[in-house]
Every structure is written in structure tokens, then in C-alpha cells.
Length: 177
Image (cartoon, rainbow, N blue to C red; front, side, top):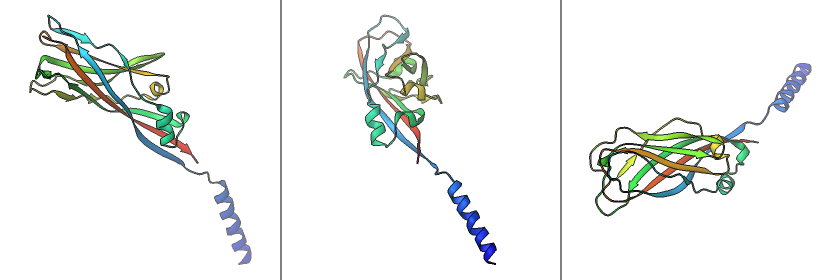
């Protein structure tokens, strides 16, 4: 009986000491603030693209606040993209057939984040774009990401229209303990 207990104890010690600690998975949002831009007046309908702008974020401080390093980031996905019309002229998205949002980074091909095709003709001044399931971890690890939008109008844009994009990402990482 003593020999059996001794063998069981030795097996338990061997099993416990050979186990590795589990990795801890963390997930948090990367807010990028607001991207303000202007859709310029045009005399005809058609496709247009808004110039790319750098997304504003501090990855080091966001990682620090979430107890993770850049090297431990394993995934980044788009969480939301909204486009808002900011003018005081009651301009709506009725003139827009479709809109797309893209992200780029140094040394990386631009990637489609979200799109709205078609955009309804219901007088709205804010639209939520339909998100694409794209992996963006290589983009966040680049020095800087940029954002731009494309769209198509079904008529002339009669005056310059100030707009805002609101973009948010979700980052996932593994912390090895």
C-alpha cells in the first residue's frame, strides 16, 4: 500500500511539474479618434476618393494600459466605421450611391475595411458601414496606419461638405505567463 501511494505521489509531482502555464488571451479596443475631411464641390456625378489621412493612436500607451506588448498582439479586426455629415445645410447621404473605407500602412497594400452598397435614400446624415472580415495585425505593427474613403454620387455635390469618419479596431493578444 505504501509503495502504491508513493508511486501515485511521484506521478502527481511529475504531471504537475511538466504542465505549462496557460497563455492569457486579452482583447481591447483601439480608438483612433475622428478623421475630419471635406467632400469638395463637383459639377457632375461619379466616383470620388478622399485623400488618405493618418489615424491618430498611441499603440504603446494602449498596449501598456492593457498589460501587453506589441509583440504579443496576435490579431486586429475592424470593430466599427461610421461616416457623419457635419454641415449645417441639411445635406444627407441621399446623393451617395455607395461608400467604402480603406486602411493602408507603409509597405502594405491598402485593404477594404467596410462598405455600404447601396446607401438608402432615406435622408440620413450618419451611416454605419458594413464591416469586412479582414486581419489587420500587420497594419497595426507598421509605424503608422492611414485611412481614406471612396464613394460614388448620383448627382453633383453643390457645396463643399464637411464630414467625419469614426473608426475603431479590436486588438487581441496572448500574454504568456
